Length: 217
Image 1 (cartoon, helix red, strand yellow):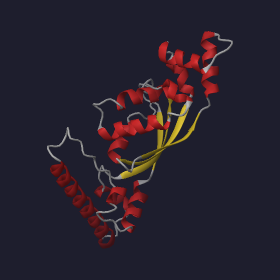
Image 2 (cartoon, one colour):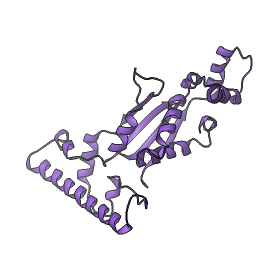
Image 3 (cartoon, helix red, strand yellow):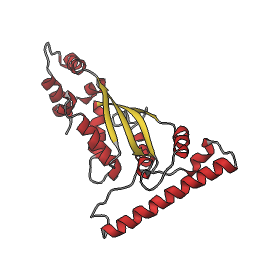
Image 4 (cartoon, one colour):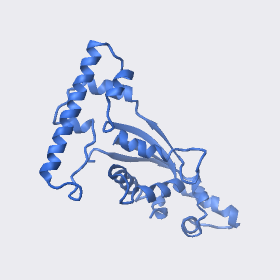
């Protein structure tokens, strides 16, 4: 989890949502406090769809990416899903990975490894053995990919079939406040997958110094 990073790139100015709430309620004047009340208390949350937030997310696994994509914009269930992402090409990621010398000291740069959690493991020794097995497996996979690239002249579209769910990716992610509230409600829950929960907390943390934090739980 230590190599997962979230950078806040941009967000819509607050004047947009303040102006938006004037229309249905015929407010002559409104403030951010009024907007927060309309969205969080009165639950007129469609107003918050006017505010879009852009992030750069770096280092999550392809497994977590699949979880994130469940919130992608869709014509169905629009109340809960409204985000868009542009993801780093696996083809080029593999090409870069195979050109580098990867070993036990830098393998964390390419694959996500779960952190130790005493509620999940009987002992730290069992956890460390698990990590060692994972590292060996991933290093072996990389060597097999390199061998196939040389022996068979496979291009990276074929080599992608050797890639695993732990492979790190980078993406630009855009979401509106309404969908962000839904995302945080689902993904900060203790029953959520531990990596997507970690990502959700990083996203929330990145917004702490913005006006958007006033809408968040």
